[in-house]
Amino acid sequence: MKFGLGKIAATAALIAGVGTAVAAQDYPYRDITTAVVWGAGGGTDSINRMIMAEMEKHLPVSINVINQTGGVAGSNGMVYVQNQADDGYTLVGLSESNVTAAVQGGWDQKFDFWYPFIVGGSPDLISVPADSPYNTLQELVDAAKAAPGTIPAAASGAGSIHHLNLLAIQNGADAEFLFVPYGGSAPGQEAAIAGEVALVVTSLAEQAALIEGGMLKPLAMLTEDDAEIAGMTVPSAFGIYDGLDQYLPLKQAIGFAVHNSASDDVKSALGAAFEAAIASDTVSEWAEANNYDVGGQHGAEATAIFTNLESTFAYTLKDLGATTVDPMSLGIAQP
Image (tube, rainbow, N blue to C red; front, top):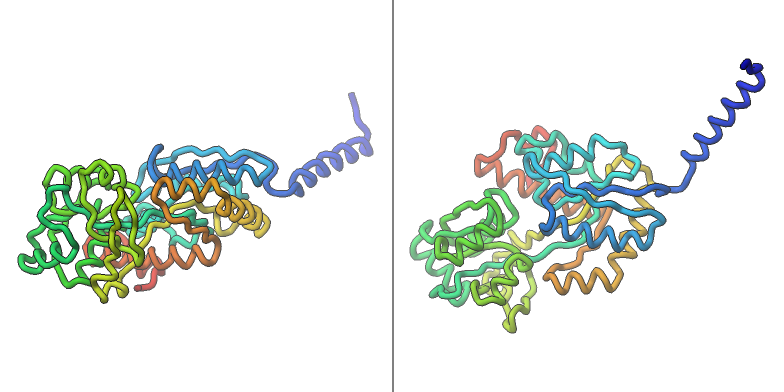
């Protein structure tokens, strides 16, 4: 069958018109995928599944959450999303721990590659085994001062936010503990319960069940506010040591991000859905039940928080000899 030039031109125009119409559709017009860089069931995964389900209520599409784990400091998931189009249809679920990927050689970008949204995080605290002789942070610090570098402390791995909080306590209280690294919060907490270490620094969300079960005894929150847990008030370390405000608080920042190069329309649509979700009863009730503080920052405000975390983490790791890439070479400013 032969077509005249006019017919061919009309068909081409029709195809082009359909393509233009699709391109002109408002974002989002198809489902979104969020790739969480950490494993299923963890804090970052749980928060992303919760916030995405709530954001769906304010968008005309579904958001599917998957896990893309592995690499250095979550780098596999970040590289995966980096390699997707910057059209807002693939988001990355991440946390403050991902800011160390670049200086550890798993990621070749500063963190400002992302346009982040912070749902929140759980505050860190210092706890000791239930049968510990220490009943206050003051008693623990006095013991550390009397025997510097001998009291073993767990705080996840080197360069983690929990480790940085331990270092902050040491600097602010002028004490020195013996840091014992573990491959995560759970192993460190188990070590404290077993008596392998004298104290542990992790988050309230991670310790809550152990405190309520009488296996850990909380001594102090590493934030400005006291906390209520298991019928007791855990005092803020800020009320004990005046110098802590030079080093603390260093808080978790868990949430998700889109390419910073995404269009303003994409950022605006995600931002509107995010703000509506953050303001919901669902999010506040979930946060209260799981011992999380709601953040709600996105865009420039969230970027400033991650920039500070990236700088603090990167140069702390460098001082510890745990970097493979000089943060200065990446353009990461010193804190």
